Length: 255
Image 1: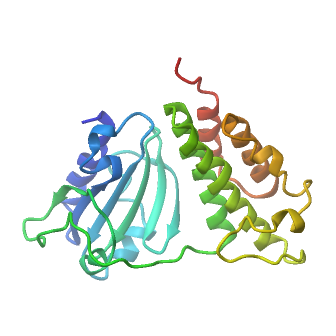
Image 2 (image 1 turned 60 degrees about the vertical axis):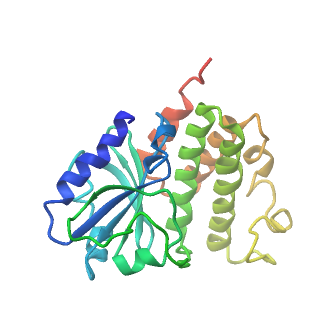
């Protein structure tokens, strides 16, 4: 296993000492397919807890910081957070009860740790449950920042198409939502299913420099810089994630 995956093992050792935890499941490249985990991967996981314990484990990150201090975090959903450790490990996780877990669609989970009396089949998938994201400036701002961060790591890995989607699509969608929420006086016939519809008619290039934010497949690095600078000029960007993005932007691509 990649050395970074040991963070989940260290986290599990701490969680095992807490009375209201049930299991820790690795997902994505931290799950069953951990052979594809590399230096640009983040740690995705589910923390399964006892009934009534979800708010404490979402609102507090003391348990998350047990293996290493956390430099930056934000709640991106009622049950979920994203966080950056001081040593550069980026995590995305959800805190769920057993009942909530059975209603989520997921596959390829790896049981990092579970209590001896935990129910069988935690690595399987149940029925889908839809939890809409928070429609707030803080949510869209931090989603945009983390989209840029993840996208630049995809770029450095050589996954340019995926990087372009994270930076020039997902992050730009969040920029559009920020404008929607913070520019209420601008008439905009918004499509609720596609934030990109009719934005050129609603916002002039001075307000939304799309040509610079979406310069194309070969210009992810330039797009990331423009979007970051745009966000910093208008919103209170957390300096930790901004510095982390600039550090990735300064990293030379592999030969």
